[in-house]
Image 1: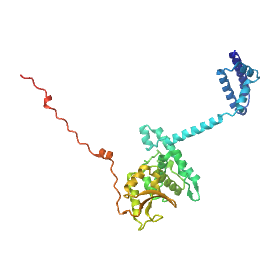
Image 2: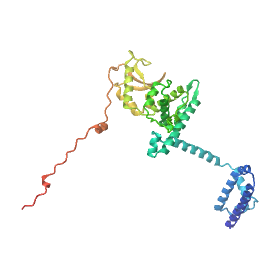
Image 3: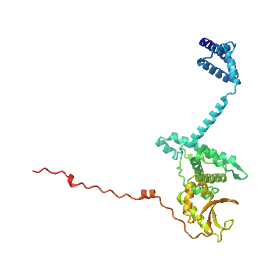
Image 4: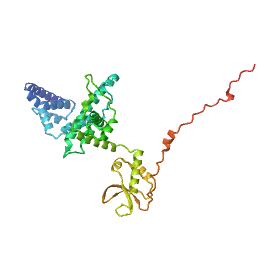
Amino acid sequence: MNTDKNTALYEKMAAEQDKFRDWLKSQPPEEILKHTYEYTVREDILVAMEELDLPQSRAAALLASPSPLADVYKEFSDRETSYMDVVRNSIEQRAEAALDAQRELPLYRHDASYAREQGDLDLYRSSHCANIACEEAIETAIADNYRDNRLDRDAVPQVIEQFGYTRALYVLANTVQQKDWDGRFSSANKTWAKTVDIPPNPDSFGGERNLDFVVNSDTGMVDLFLTQARQDYLRLQPLTPEEIQAEAARLLQELRAPDTPNSPHGTHYMARVSPDFLARAGTQAHEQLMKLLPFRSLTITGLVDRPGTYVTILASEDRSKELRQPRRSVRRQLKQEPHPAEKPEKKSSAHKKKEPER
């Protein structure tokens, strides 16, 4: 019977493993460590044999070996398996999960005292530790990407990939606020930092916990890093109607400026569209820009011999026209209009209960 041969094979392998275990236990720790992987795989082979039902001839052939377990282990070791691929994939997936968790950890915007009152100390501590880790990552990114007296463009993405814009900008704003006396920060960055609400966070010894995540790299480099981070973040935000209106007004002014057509062939007036506008503008923003400029021949195009994107109009256009006014959203207008108060219905006298005649 197949069962008899398979049972005998399993029992022989189990006895072989017991003998291997006894030998291993007599070895010094260094030798035991060398054979840890082999021991584990041999245990797995035994587990597989408990469920495996080999044909009679194959079980008998393997049973004839003086050391069938060692033979199977050697066969396993000699094969090209995906074991290391699984190990590498596990490392990569766990690292990606850890990165996602770090990036998605909520930023706690209150001090330790408030967190204690609200029962949020775990959230506060996790966020505070992440702030410190982010500060250290910014210092590392600056050190890694500073060369030839300039900061490489890869510095900011290196940090944002780990912590996201919300935490990185919070840490940078805190740095500027704590070093407001340092004249090497630009006035624009100082003004921006004041708009970020970071409450004082004193400890019981009179210190300031917010000093824990102040970036201590060269101030000039931190200022460059912050400027780039703010610009990169802004490019990810959709354009507001006010920003589209401002770009249209700027382009109209540039189209009016030349006395003669300024296109390469002298047939059109042209003005270059702001690169920042293009970086943030989607199809809808482009359409809105076109609707605001009051020219029938208006086109947006690139030029062969010049970088950038341009709006062009024929030389015959009347450049004294004003911008078209954007049409108000009907839906928004309806939301803003007050609804007339509903008057209570008068009860009909027909429904009035009559008194019985006496």
